[in-house]
Image 1: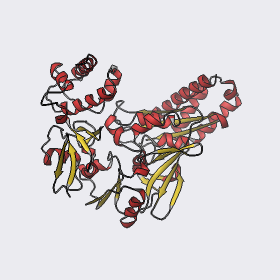
Image 2: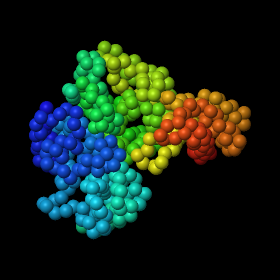
Image 3: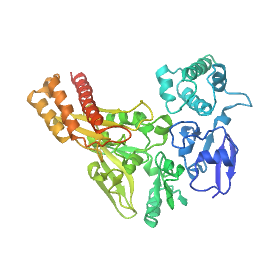
Image 4: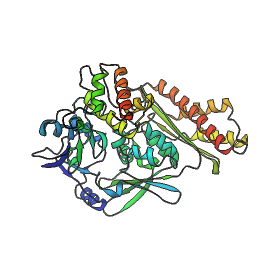
Length: 157
Length: 290
């Protein structure tokens, strides 16, 4: 089947999509958007987090056909005119990236949190990121990054 | 494999009648895992996420009618005042990503003994609405789930809604797992108080082949509350009675040993969850009424 969807503001058509494949597979293997990572394929790790029609989802749990005509934003789509988003900058500055595999998913989840809640408490940050696993950092610097990004947003930055 | 994406309920039911082996898909939190791991290759899938009739909820004569496609995130955001037990359970499901996709209809259809929505629906006395292209029917949840991951759903039918009586008193839910998020319950328990009829109802999860009602425990605690005049006096439940309630709930469980826990641990935990949830709900009742 052919699949039409909007990814990061651009209309795409993916050809010869197998009807059983996930949105994650389409993004990575057919549309050249490898930012969303493929790890657990069961919604446990959050590495493949994207927006589907403005809702945070695991793209591994979305059947490709469910994304027909929908709008997807991946970590690649958070940059503005080639500049990193302030959430991405904050992850770099706080040293919240080690191996980096979980980072795209965490960045999208953090982006989603801060779009709903400009000044989250630590408990709210932990709850919002509970579906994103990191095996390197121990999460302390990830929490620092979220606080840094939140503080800058409030400061108008 | 073929994917059908109906935009209306009749179209979806017609597709199910035409191909009864087609597997319904909503949030994908169960079925997509099976597809990704090659555990299941259905010849056809019916995507229900575009069926507008399944996506909402409305009020219906003292009850809330939840469309099968309503997500956990929406249960938390929209129906907590009317269905507090279900909202508490929905808040414990998976992660934000999972709660944004997983649906109450999917939890019913999968019918896992560990399904988080099932104990509060049981305690609330929910009815499951099923439809085929030619007929519809409604079953109590106790009759709908027939065993581990098996239901009374006919091949030509889809789950369309669940009808849940609006809470008339405090409700609680609690579950045990290895962490707060992303946990399949080792065991879980839901409780509802019904002050208008001096009733206490229960739902046990993940400690039996299907969600169970702790009938002896319900009768026992109702008897204590009645004898002691506690509904009217809004008095404290005697500690020994709360402990006995927990023991009777633990006895009502039919747990198994598996990767998530042992029979002994599950029974013990179930008794504690029952005692605690009774205390929380009863404290709420005393606060609100007092």
